[in-house]
Length: 518
Image (cartoon, rainbow, N blue to C red; front, side, top):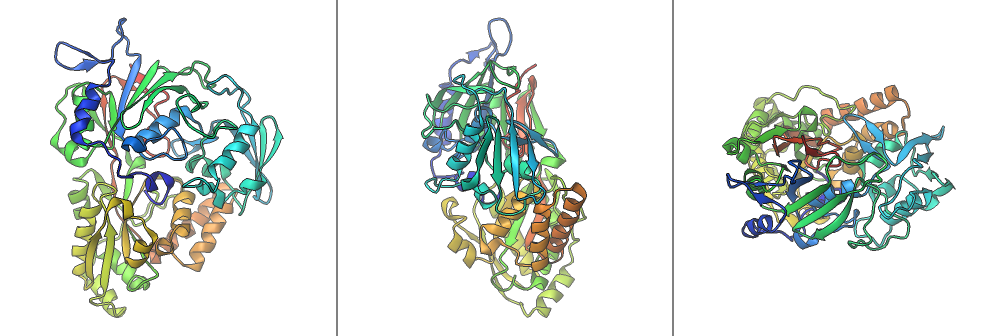
């Protein structure tokens, strides 16, 4: 996952160790012991009115501010409290608080037509004033990480055109603003909100916050006036932990009903609970894993060496070693599973051709430093293995392991020859836009590529958009700087009674608004 606010805040060093995790799970109350030693959240009438999920947390760094989220526990909680104007569905964009986005003929502005039946958790109506305020709030320079949408939308020029109508000018032609609003964090907050305490953190979602202890637990209660219909569960409890095995243990012990992002080692070892099922999100929701090569420094400023680096990789070996077989080889393009993705075959390994290209470029024994940290499980192992394979073709390659907090520092990226990288199946406009804009060391400075990227983002018709995205990916596949060696399955554990989980963008952070027990 690259360069977004969620990633940049993911690990502030505020973690809850494995030793304290057991105490946390024991302290979460409400569960009662059964005869077999497991816990259950069954109500007196036998129904399961409470849904418990456990996610990786950020300790004291967790927050109710939807624009300062630091960990999966934050993302999942905020998704059912605050809402977007549009949401990502299975290969499509769906209306949420906005019914549609009417695009101007030149694609330089659009009008948001809002739902008129939405209420905030305090009972007040949701209006255009809230949307205008939310855009101003998310893009404020006072925020530690202002919204990336300000690179595309003219936040200062937004106008209210009616109680439920907002006009939004853009900084460049945008032919599909709904996708941008769905994919980038764009939670709506009530006009005038400046702090997010237990009392003031209100949204329009299916659940409202009734208790919050950063790094421990959030209690969410169903909001019966929700415009989308009352949720099937009365209550959601989100447990915040850090240790991966502790998340697994919480399911086995019966103290939680669901957890995501299961380590491949835990899956391979097996789950010792008959009522807990291991699941994979499916081929459309795999995580892309690989490297971004720095084209501003030799040797990867030469397209021949970039191609050699791709030809040298034993992709199946990487999949078997890092994913333990829970995945498939990648084809060097990001956004696998997203609309318009170019699903071509991966390059076959060809060490002899890779050596020839390195020699032809005069890059024999060239130093290659790959910046890595265990930001994603497998970054360090894959970097070590890739460097071994690159040494076979004449490159003097080595991984540079750094701390999590410094991993994406600009100076460090600029000095390295490449960086370990992962990404969900986000819309192409999001990831290509980030790769092109965030750091020169991660950009692909190719004129045809940049022209096609701008045209793809401006296109208003599907056929035209597909044509330009094909050109973007053709250029990246031929001479580009992304090396995606594998697509890893997103694994989860769930009690066999669990139903209603939805994937909206990233399977590691499922939407719990309809989660319940059958």
